[in-house]
Image (tube, rainbow, N blue to C red; front, side, top):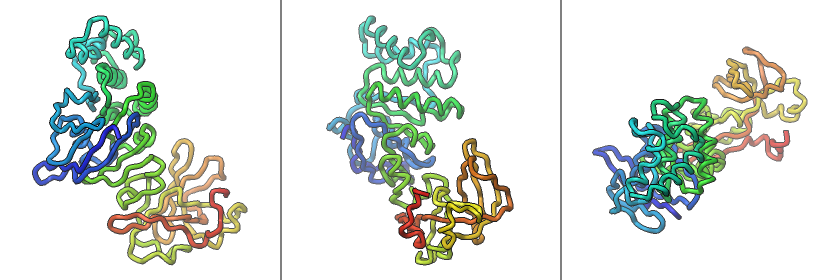
Length: 355
């Protein structure tokens, strides 16, 4: 592992920001620290950087414990949420700043700065000042400045938080491409699930100072290990009891269930494709239809509860108030700490993916 956190604990008074945090990041990987606001993810990032000191445990970088090594000597590049650019320095001077602090030769500085400005797509803007740039351009300057001294590790704290939604989406793809080109190990903090899924190789879910789960975006989404992850990831309906639904009578009563939109199918009663599955369906009524660009999101009332499902625009039109057949494929059942998937018992032997 290139970066390791070993039994890290950190308190701020009565607030536990990190509770026995343990994880490792392989060299060249891009990892997202994902969690709600106040979960402790930025504190973890700052402890890796040396900007915050843990109360106990070890921060290990490239096999070396760095607890007593100052932030400036850890070989880390840091990109802040608010860019932290020097307002009275040009783009060129901002990118060159770290190299000048290291007292590199003038020619080497010029070569490196030119290389990075071209890499981030800001050629021709070298003489501009930060207030002459857009938010996306400023973040590119911050990225180039962090890379200038050739750090072995790049840390980014909510790198797109101060940028509007359209530009933020564009920058996600740009950042993933840049990191791949440079090949640098990177860890970034975000509370945005879409951002984590689109950009990261691996995701670490943090909640109330605890590490809930670490894995690939697909693994985190499809196989949540804790009740928090199952509820936090994706768009879900959380129900207090699901045992009354067809095919789920075996569920323990009184346990919460999570139903995601992709677990639900809604179709008209004359749909031949699903004719053989009618015995497993419930009757639902469409309460709302939301247009999501490439699909419709239907909200249906089924047995007195609201469920959501996504419907392709290529299918027959539906309307609010229309009665539908509703099929629930699976649910997550929660206890205090764990999430376990339960499949509809009436669909045994049915290849759902083939429908």
